[in-house]
Amino acid sequence: MHKRKNAFIIMTVPALLLFFTFHTYPALQGVYYSFTNWRGYGDFDFVGLKNYINVFKDERALHAYLFTFKFAVVSTILVNVISLIVAMGLNAKIKFQKTLRAVYFMPNILSILIVGYIFNFIFAHFIPEIAEGLGINALTRNILGDQDVAWIGVVIVAVWQAVAFNTILYLAGLVTIPEDLYEAASIDGAGPWRKFWSITFPLIATFFTINMVLAMKNFLMVFDHIIALTGGGPGQATESISLLIYRGGFEGGEFAYQSANAVVYFVIIVVISVIQIKVLQRREVEM
Image (cartoon, rainbow, N blue to C red; front, side, top):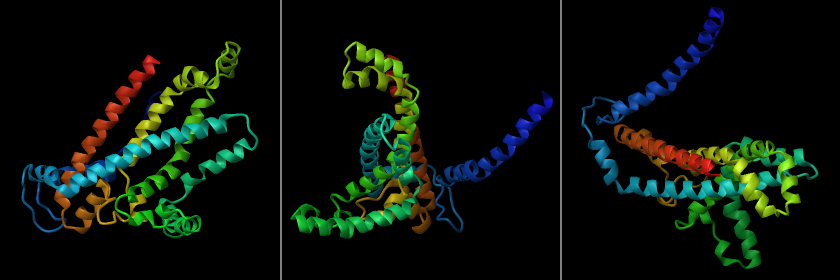
């Protein structure tokens, strides 16, 4: 028993040290610098809560927060609806089921930057040329170059790639539902819609909670898709919080200020995740 405990300690302590060195310690350093005026180099002074107060007065930061929340909410809803529908289709008794599952998972293993550049070409050339041929004036321009609708292009690409992972999670839940329940419901005269709300959805409620929380958290931290598609533009129309923190902190000499912004955003993400878990778990119990 003693040797077994030592083996567990040997396995976990190195991982714990690496996590603390490369994750926790830098994060704590960021919190420390958020109370200073450090620019990323040279001397610095403590400024108290000045950086935190300025974050709430910064119109560029507020715009980035609004864009990020709008993007995250819309993307989270779309991803969960689409991935649940796809998972139910892939869980049905259809031909080439395993092949289709592999095909639908392909977007998840592709690099976000490569996917972004491909969709950039599609939005800039492919769709406008087809739209011109069909006489659809609304799509003859690159939507990524329009301040009002550029965010829709980012949502389309992010959702297309994220659906694969969420579909796998929903499939994991669907295969745990006994077929006997559906047969009994059919004997009682239940239709497809009734089976979904009375059997399928309650029994995959845990997977729904996991998918909602993970999707919302990932979309709130959106960075790669925006870099690959719009670079935050046109203007600052698609500038997310993560992109603003990166640019201001590493390119704009605002290391301390953006550290304060990062701390505020970290707290917001934690609060949103906790609320999501509490609300969705309460709903699971009611089901």
